[in-house]
Structure formats: C-alpha cells, structure tokens
Amino acid sequence: MSNSDGAETVPGDTKRRPIRRPRPGSSAPRFAKPLTTASVLGWTALSAIAPGAAHLRAGRRRAGLALLGAYVVLLLAALAFGLTRNLENLTAFAGDSAQITVIIVATVCALAWFAVLVTSYIALGPNRLNQQGQVLTGILVGVLCVAVMSPFALTANYVLTFRDTIKQIFPSQAEDPEVPPPPKEGEDPWGGKDRVNFLLIGGDAAGNRTGVRTDSMNVASVDLKTGNTVLFSLPRNLQHVRFPPTSPLHKQFPNGYMAELPNGGLLNEVWQYANDNPQLMGGKDKGPRALMDAIGYTLNLKIDYYMLMNMYGFADLVDAIGGLKIRVEQDVKWGGHFGTAGTIKAGYRKLSGEQALWYGRSRVDSDDFSRMARQRCVIGAFAQQATPAKILANFSKIAGAAKRLAKTNIPEHLLQPLVELAVKVKSARITSLQFVPPEFYSGRPDWVKIRQAAKKALSDSTRPAGQAQTANVTASPSVTSSSASPTRTQAATPTQTPTRNSQKTGAKSLSELCGLA
Image 1 (spheres, rainbow, N blue to C red):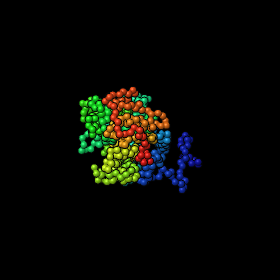
Image 2 (image 1 turned 90 degrees about the vertical axis):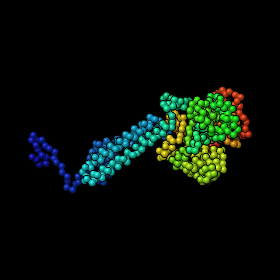
Image 3 (image 1 turned 180 degrees about the vertical axis):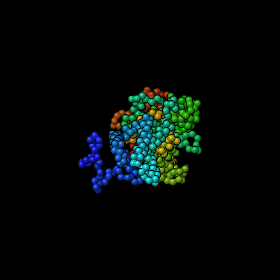
Image 4 (image 1 turned 60 degrees about the vertical axis):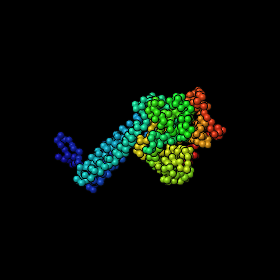
C-alpha cells in the first residue's frame, strides 16, 4: 500500500523510506559508469604512484582512503628522513646490520607494491571487459608489476653484491685468526689512535711474470680527527731497505735488504722474496707483512693496513667511472717498451682505463721518478672523481673488478669506520711527498733525512691546528716505529748520500701538483 506522501506502508503501520529516482536529465554517479580497457589500465597505473586511486574509482572508499593515507604517511616519513641526513649519516649503511635491513625493506616494499597493483586491478572489475580486453589488461598489468618491483629488486641486488664484495676482499676473524676481534659497542674502532697509516700498493702481476711486483707504493697517513692526509711515494728501486728488530728478515739482512748486491736489493722485490721464503718468515703469504715492516721502518711510522690493487684491474675501475680527467704536463708515449700504441698529448685530457694505466706506468723517454709523480696524480684524480653518483651508476662493474683484483688486511668490521674516514678525507687537505732525486737518492738512501722529511710533512699537515703526532725521528733506522725510546745498533748506522741535508724539502698540495679542480 501507499499513501499520498509517496511512502509505502506495511502491516504494523511502519513506513519504508521513499524510493528516490533520478531526476529527468540527471546522470548516474560517476563511478557507476562502465570501465573501458584503457580506463582499467589507466587507473591501475595511477595506483602505482598513488595507491588507493583505483579503489576510490571503484567505489571502495574506505579501502582507497586507507591506502592513500598510509602512502602519504610513508612518503612524508621518507622525506623527513632524507632531509635530516647528510653524507656522513648515510655511511651507517656500510655496516652489515644496515645492509640486511635495506635488503629486507626493499623486499617488503616490492611485495607491497605488487599487492597494491594486483588488488587495484581486481577492484576495477576487469571481468566485465570483453575477452580481448581481459587478456590485454592482464598482460600489461603484469608488465607494470615487474616495472614497479624492479627498483626495489635492483636496490636489494646492489646491496647483496656489495656484501659479497666485502666478504671476498675484507677478511674476518672467522676466516683469518690473525684478524683482531671487532671492538665492543661504544669503543673506538681505531683503538684510540690519532693517525692511521695505509700502504697503497699497485701490483704488476702480468701473465708473463711469476709472482707480484709491487711497482707502485704509497703510504697514506690520515689524521683521524681532521681527515688531512699526507701521501708518501716511495720509489720501486729504493735499495737496501732495513727491517725492524721485530721482523724475521732483520736477522737475515742486518745491513739492509741484500746489501751485498750493489745494483740489487730493490724495494719492489721484498714482497715476493718473503712469499718465496716462508721458512724465514714463519709462514706462507707473508709478503705484505715484510713490505709493511720495511716501509714503516723507513718512514718511522707504523703501517696499520695495506691495500693491493693489480694495475690491470685499476684500468677496469677507471673505465667503470667513465674515465679520468687529468692535466698532462708533457706528451707521454704509451704501449709496450717503445710507446708504439699512441701518445697522450699534453693538456687537460680525459683518459680511458688503458690510457690512465699507461700514463702511470710508461717509462718511454722518462724514468721511475717521473712516473711516480704521474701515479700519485692518477690516484688523486680517481679519489676525487669517483663520486657516489658514478659509483652507484656503475656499481656492478666496480664490484666485479674489485673482487677479482683487490687484496687487503683491513678487517671487515672496520668497513663502516673506513667509509666515514673516506668521506672526511674527501673534503680535507691532501699533501704529497716523493722520495726522489735530487732531494733523495734511491741508490744510497739517507735514512735520517727520509725520516726527518716524513716527520715534517706530517707536522705541516696539522697546521695550524696543532703539533705533529708522530714518533720522534731518530738517527738510527734500526729503531722500531712503535718505540718511544729509540736504541742504536752498529749494523744499522745510515750511510750518507749526495743529498744535502740543508736542501729544502716538503710536502706539496696534490691539487696544485696535478691540476685537480
């Protein structure tokens, strides 16, 4: 039954609400319109950047608003995190726990976005499309899901590659019992040191040679507080280096490495000699230890860690970052013994990996000391131009080259502090000192003068902040680098060279020497 007001009556005098009919000329609600193939794809795609949009279009407002609200909250949280962090804060991601967290978060985000797209597609009701539309939208939405998940998968893959590279290069205590245990939480990872010394070695282990020749040897002495760094370059043909009393080779060569050979006993032979004579060194693969002892004793520094990079691998690294921009002082012929491959012209040049390698190695119309100067410029240019953006863009290539060709004794647990230190060094002052003629002669080294110059360079690098932070320079190269009270032995008395001790020496800015911007 019905009455005049349009409401229907039912037994018991209860009234039902009147049925509302659309007014003449009015349209139905927008979301009630049938969806086409294009609109299904469009709203699903929109949900990839604005989760919940498809649900709202389908009339599922509660679910749509919930998804959109959660997305906005996460977006604002991510924005706040990014704005409150700088490069030093981001170095925490070098830690193992942070890497695992990134992998988990990337995986969860990939699965979440996949679920959002699938549910958005289903909410739009693709079953109301014709068969051709259902097949087409299903395929394209599947492609869209892969595209949306790819950045998260790529992030997780980068981190996994990074972790694998770290574990292959940096030793852990589980793999090597000589590796010190990681510091406890809150302890200084550098053990309270003011300065840490790294021996950077360029190895020449070509296929036609036996063993490794350490043709490029540089010590990077880094102030842990300021990041100021002094780069000491030692010539490969430095003769008759001495070893500290704590070294197994001290007894074997009390007067210097192969001092009985007037034209032998070169510094670049020490590594391989120690490896070839494990009975003298007390074990296998002691070349790094022997070279660290010899160079540290020469400079009166304690060498804490070493890093060896095969020179041919360095070319791969240079190519991975797109080449190096270097100021070439004069034409350098390269390739083979006679420079038949080409010439690197003077001026500001962008060198490929092979060219950068030969620029640092070529002795055509040159000598060891000239190429030492070029090598330190190549190292400085790489350190400056290997920006985070370039590293991320070419990470797989860089990681692959590093895994194949790098070797170090830096413990895995020091990676995060090392990255933090590298960030500090990048914006600090880097000076360089070469022990080359005419100020230093490699045939008859003046050990006293070498130590005095090293001490002065370290002292100058701290100015105007403070005093030098190295051990006292002594007149006897038999003093161990860690000894605060030096002793003298007759066998280790240094010989004088044609180098005049009154001649002025000192470290110079790498930017000025190499024309680095």
